[in-house]
Image 1 (spheres, one colour):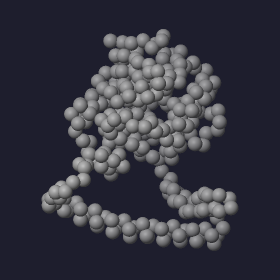
Image 2 (tube, helix red, strand yellow; image 1 turned 180 degrees about the horizontal axis):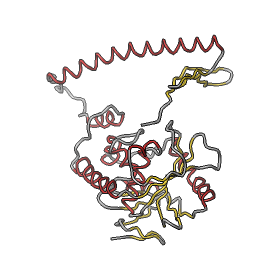
Image 3 (cartoon, one colour; image 1 turned 120 degrees about the vertical axis):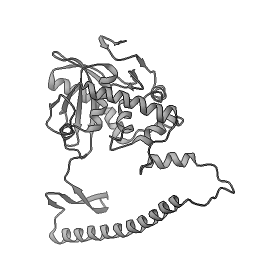
Image 4 (cartoon, helix red, strand yellow; image 1 turned 135 degrees about the vertical axis):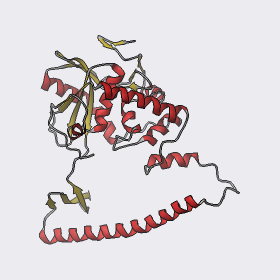
Length: 323
């Protein structure tokens, strides 16, 4: 089965739906795994994990909260597309807005754009404003097949989104187009991913299995350290009532005592960390420098607050590629 989106045939799609408003689109997203959901559900995203997706699909739709990064990204999408078109000469359709392309299994992806290349035909375009510390590889790189080395060129979670979009649509290539935190106005970078049928088939199967286990059957994701996990568990607590106490099991006693020991270690580690940062700050005051640098990173004097009442803190940043 295939579906057409304007002039474009989407061989893998089962349906394409356009929603009149963002609330309707958000409600529809509860019935499927989107491209960004896939990266989060499988633990590939640095910003959220499986508990975030579990809550978003199983709990009633709450207030629509977009953080600054998301709002900035959506605002910049038309400009990013225009800059890409100007730099490459390629035509595009988009930004596409509140629509979902339903694909095989549990996939239902929202495309940022579609890009036409005279040699490769139509492909998906994923638009990003990236403020993360990740060091992108050379712009205009082409990734023919996903390998560990490819994660040194593009972010794994962004790549997962594009592969999910290719799996849902059946299009044979996709492109991540970014404006990074240090890019000049009017300049974008792009990275092309060709279809990886084995990876995409695995992704579709994993997504369908995850949806069945955790959304349909309601099985919890693995307990982890995230705030989303804590919030989900808190919402499931029974109402306060008398007679709710019980004796802890041996395993629970061991876990609770380990928490107390870690709390003591954390307090000591925090105190030692702050003492070392203060020593670094004192050294910077004496030498009248705002940055200390070495191969592994930088120590920087961070300025904040009002001009008439500034605040300063010492921040230590590593030099590394985001994993």
